[in-house]
Each structure stands twice: as structure tokens, then as C-alpha cells.
Image 1 (cartoon, one colour):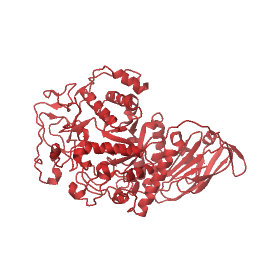
Image 2 (cartoon, rainbow, N blue to C red):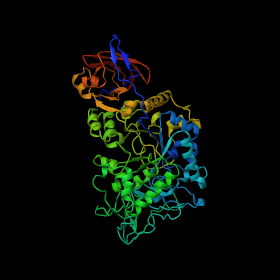
Image 3 (spheres, rainbow, N blue to C red):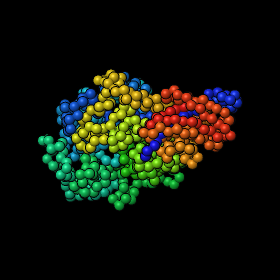
Image 4 (cartoon, rainbow, N blue to C red):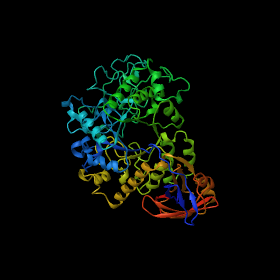
Length: 624
């Protein structure tokens, strides 16, 4: 697309009466004192092992000694304070539960992991080996790794931030071994009948009388072919289990999630359900009613195990969870577990990775999820727009189609699974990502998520080992260059950032803090795209506009994703918007809340217009 643009204008009512420039008295709604109102939430995802790493070697397949690793202790008070200042309310510490890793921790009683079923050298954070402890890589003293994470929870709370960690109910590491299970807790599979493919209270699915075989590929060798006592093309598993992504082959494909095994939730191999179902009408019931329903019900063993895992971490002060591949687990289980969590902490933040729009409402209303990824709709469309493969117009339909659940659809442009926003495979430059970020953060009342390094333009160019460039490696020991420049050797002051990186981080801080403090961000949405596309001269097809408002604050958002074109046009606010805002004819001076410039909103005959000139990828927030 040749032309695209972005502006955000906020009009706020600060008194009971305002005066237009032509001396016309413009009655405004009287400001009333109210209790605490809902506010936007901002989640900052950090890949815990990478955040504090100061090593810049970035040798492919490098060891900890060669490439370095971050620790829990790297999240100092100063680091947390700076994250808070960015405009953040929650930190999602990714990769905390103890997962497979190719490093010798046997002196701490931890068994070595087999490279044949580990992706990368540092391992996938989604192949969890022990849910009742944490990754020893992240501790200064691995013997005290749990205590170090507990200290990080306390430190995070002290700095007025909340803690989210991962739970991955769909699959676990092939070699799951609980070393520090609470009293009475048995490992997954300990009581399984391995002679049958399926039994309701088995934790796994089996391929009876068949031995597991390690997947092979001419293009991939574990540890890049490096010698290792366990790197022999074999892994002892008999009988073989189904693989995490559902493969029922004893020798899964190299592209399967072969490092993990599928957990059984009482779904028979034919897809039918072997557990109690929620009664009709439960989509309108609260978590307390769901909790009461499950009391006394006979549920599969895996349900109880994961409920107990979640409650264990809630008791340690964790404030919420991000659930990996939640839609691969039945919604009834989520009702069971999430209602139990909410009974312990009604404010727990429960975020699910779900990619099927047809199932969104089930997982929110029946599964009692607080938030789902808005990946397939908003994220995918914004990516297509910035790549010139789509017009922004469908954003209206996307937003309106989710009107009843928009608050529950978390927005993001970057995370550990996706290509970096600034990478050539996505926007190409961090500056091109600015209009996407403004729209993503302001189009709904949903939470906004930022992935560490995004705010300083990290592009994910490094080759870690397993996987390809454009995503910051989650499988290997790497440094994150732009983030390291902000970290500045542990000072967390941005001392090594380039001028462009400093400006970008400042932009994110201004935008995120604005959304946290704007009442209209949790108000109503109305598109003004259609009227401007039809009636506004020089309104380029790449432009997109909408309003957000409450009784006390009015916002106008105009987005143009062009990185080459400066656009000049008279933006139109139709009569129904002016009427809803109770604006009389007159002129209103508005001031940009990001960078301080001014503009004028003219209202004549009940229609508003604003003369705008917007540079490529520029953003504004104006307030009356």
C-alpha cells in the first residue's frame, strides 16, 4: 500500500461549560465524582532467561559459558521501576517452570535431559519437566532456585507490578520428573495403565507394545551434531506416547512437538468426552456457580493435577497465568480449573492462547477465561495492512463483530511465537510499527501486550541455533542486542541506546501511559471510517479512523500506515458523533498529549471537521 497514516485525538471535558473560539457557549456534560473505574491493562512479556543477559557473543548453539544467560536476580528494583514507568501493570515472566535444558545439573539431583528430545540447547519453555519448581538456569544458586523466584515475586509486587507465569496443560516434557512435589503429589503417568491406548484417568495416551522412535531429518541434528553422551538418536520410552500436538505415531515427524507428550483430559481417541458436561445456560453463570457445579463431580486425574499446580503457584503469590494452546484442552476443564483459581484469587489474570474465533465465546463464557489472544483477527489484519496486502477498512467489522467480548481480546504486535514487529518479515522497521501500535493499543478496552525489546526496535536478527531468524530465540542462549543497549550493563537507563531507539522507547512510554490513564480507553467504540472514505477529499484508502468516548472524555483516532506519504485532509466527524458528544457549533482547540502540538476541531451545522497534516508513521493524541 502506498499511503497510510495515523493520528489519535482525545477531547476531554474538564468542566461544566466550555467556550468556542467564536464565543458560543458550548454546554458540556457535568463532571461527576465516581468510584474507581475500570482501566486498561498493559502486560510486559519478558523471556526470563534472556532479559538480564549481558553477553553479546551470540554464537550459534553456544553454551551458557559462551553466550551467557539472564537470572531472576537481574530483575532489580531499578529494572522493575523502569518497566513500571514504561506504562506496565503486569509482567509475564516467560519460561519460569522447570523445563528441559541441555546442561548438567546432576549435583543438584536433576537428571540430564536427552538432546534427541530437546529443541535447542537451552530448551523449549513449553516442554515442562517439573511444575513444582523452576528453571535452574535462572538461578544464581540452582539449589535455591525456587527461593530466588519467590524473591522475584516479592520484588515485583514491591514495585507495584503483578506477576504472570506460563502453564501448559496440553502437553509436558517426555521425561517429566517431579523432584520437589508437595506431599501426596504423584508424577504424571505414575498410576497409568500403559497397556491400553486410552483410559479416562490415565494422564497420557499410549501406543501399546510399541517403542518410541526419535524423529529424523536430513536438515537437522540435535545440538548441531555436537557430541553428547545422550545424543545417540535414541530415547527410552516404552510404550510410546502420543506427541504434544496430537500425533499418534511412535515416530513423530520432525515438525511435530516431539519433545512433548499429549496430556489426556478425558477426551476419547474418537473425540467424545468422558466427563461431566456443563448444563445449558452456564455461559451466563459466574465463576462461583461454576465452582459449585464441579464440587463432588468425578473428573479425570489430569484435571486435578493441573488444578493443584495452578493453586500451588497462586499460593506463592503469582497473580495470573498465560495458558499455552488452551483450545487443545476441553472447555469444561477450564471451567473446573479457572473457577477454582478465582475462588482463591478473584482478581487472578487468566490469559489463553486460542486461535479459533468460533470458540472465543466458549472459552470466555464457559471456560471462565479473562482474556484471549486477538491474533487471528486484529493482529493478522494489521500485519497484512503494513505489508501492503490488505486495506484497513475491515478493522471496523472485526471490532464490531467482537463487540460483546472486545474487552477480553488481548492485543499484541510482538511475542515469543511471532516474528518481531521490526523484523524484515513483519513491518521492516520499528518506525513502521508505530501506527500499528497506536491502533492496537487504542481501538478497544482490552489489555495491550508488549514483548521485551519491542519498545526499542528489536528485530530478532540473531541465529541462536534451533529455529530461524526474525523471532528472538526461545530455544537457545542468546543476547538481545537492542534490549542490551537499554539495559546498559545492568544500569537499566538506556545509556547505550541509539537516538532512534531512545525516541522509540519514549513513544511507547507516552502511548502506554496515556492508555492507562484515559477513561475513554474503556469506553465506547464507533468507526468513522465509512463516512470519511465516501465523503472526505484526499482520504486515502490506507487511512483508518474511529472514535472512543465516555461521558467525560472523547477521542478521535485516525490511522494512516504510510511510511512514505504525508497526508493532508479534512477529517469528518458525522452528525451522530457530534450529537452523542453534545457539541454545539463552534471551534475547539485541541492539544496533542504525546508531543504537544495543537489542532482545531470545527463544528458547523452539527458536523465536525479537522484539518490534518500527518507525516509518515506519525501519531497524535489531542485533548480539548
